[in-house]
Length: 193
Image 1 (tube, helix red, strand yellow):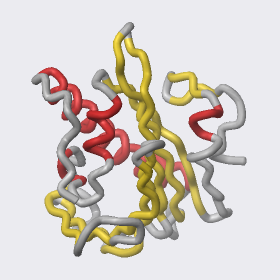
Image 2 (image 1 turned 180 degrees about the vertical axis):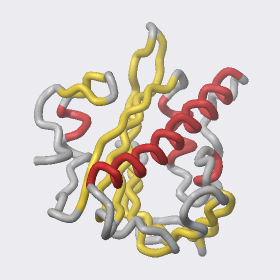
Image 3 (image 1 turned 90 degrees about the vertical axis):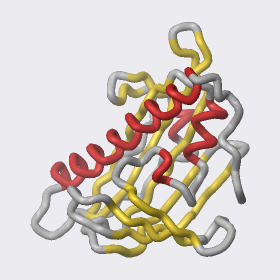
Image 4 (image 1 turned 60 degrees about the vertical axis):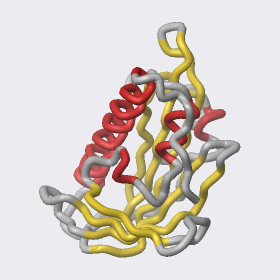
């Protein structure tokens, strides 16, 4: 059962209970795929972090490798976003479909369905949870994924590459959220849709 957490488990030094992963971070991993779960603690309120994450139409607000994003119409389940990737990565474009957006449970799910990269059958789920950090209200972000292992690569190499991208995105999300919180911008980032 690779990638599925069934008991209290340590991930990246954090103790994660099944309540956070059993419902939302289960991926069916076929033989030619790899999967992983990453966690980031952020010293900013959950509503502020979620207001950044939920913006399917503006991932560049916190994803450092995204230079531009366009969504035709109002973002809703099934909507596609066309992402331009900054140089330095082995890709220039990505087409992604919004699979899940739940403001009550704070869940965002996407699938990558096209682009000039090697992430085939990529699916990710990101959830945002309130968490006490050093006695203050903070946020725990969990992101999990499943993806095909490209021909000529190993599962370990593929997971390492994708985990590195996600870690960079989560680090940037923490930095942006904590900066906004420090500037006393505690209201959610206004949604324009």
